[in-house]
Length: 577
Image (cartoon, rainbow, N blue to C red):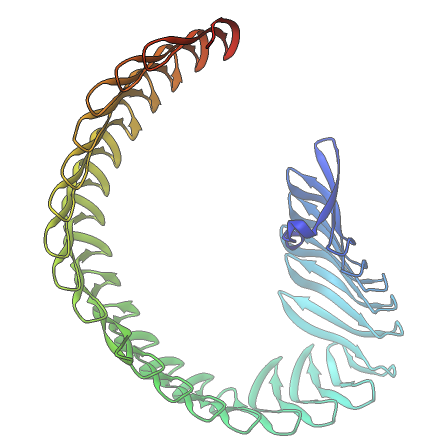
């Protein structure tokens, strides 16, 4: 059901019928044909859902509970007849299962228990006659009865000679069953009559030498399941994999190859476990990895390479855990040539980064350097520019920035400084312009602006003052002209303008004076011309004009006066002549 919901919204139409807190929903595809329908309850499928293919044919019915298949699941052929039907409980197959031929004739039937086949399973020929009976015990299959298409009983009570054929009568498989298990020599064939596989079973398990072939007749594999040489081949005759088994376990050198005959992997095994140096290669023949093993665990030197032969990662293992110095290489283009140099390097202990680690720029100069303790940064870390000057430096504690930090411009002049507390900005942070003048000075607490924040222009003149409480504007707010004179002043309360706000000319004359409550103008509001004459006087309540509004020209003459209520004029007292 989930995949149907992912259809692009613009290409999907659905119909909803609602009732009793449930929604019956029908989805249509881009061709306007129905693709699914059923009940949604709290946004999840509930009860029986039906699904159709793009041609409008019913292909599946599923019973759901809380969006999960629970109950009957049925698949259909395009002719409308059932393909198979079973039941699901808690995500596992359970109960009776049936499968049919396309004409509706029963093909297979049995039971599932906790997701596994259990008990007797029967299969039938298309004419309805019994073909086989298999019994499943603890997940293991036992053939009890097998009847040929001609009606001959070949296996009875788990014993007998098995023979199956293709529709044209060509033998498909032949062998022996003993106590329900494959036994002795078995041969399978392709439809063209060529042998597909040949070997022996013992109690249903392959044993001894087994040989398989491609349909062309070329050898595919020559396997010895207990002891001896094992080989798998590509169809072109090149050996894909070769090595020996001893008591059913890999022993000695095992080699796998690409289809072009070049080695893909090679290494030694003892008693089924990797031992010594194991190598893998790229298809072009270049080495891909060299890793040392001891009793199937990585121990000692380990190296990885890029396809061009350049190094990628060099390191060491101890019992499958990274240990000692590890080097990670980087490949860069310099003057059009591919050059590989160290990218970063440092020690591991017990699989974790421990000790001094160094990182490099593509040109080989040091990028950053510092200490790790159990995979976490600790102590002083320094980051550099490519010219060798310090970019920034500071302390870490348990992987978090802590204490005093400084950063610098590329010419060595100070750029920024401040304090961290558990990776959060704390106390005063100061920044400087490249020329040396202060850019800002901000107080922080727990990573949030807290207290005064001052900003300056490149000449060192203050341009803005803000006051914060836990990251929210709260208190004095001032904006300054380039010469340092006050332009705007006011107050914030919990992030909103509150109280008296004023604006001034560069000469210090008032331009505006207003009162705010929670970002809305309240009370008297005045505006002045730059010559000091009153320009406008008004009364506000909750951000709207309520009361008298008076407007004046630059000479102080009244030009308009009216009474307002909630931004609406209720009386004009004076109007321009």
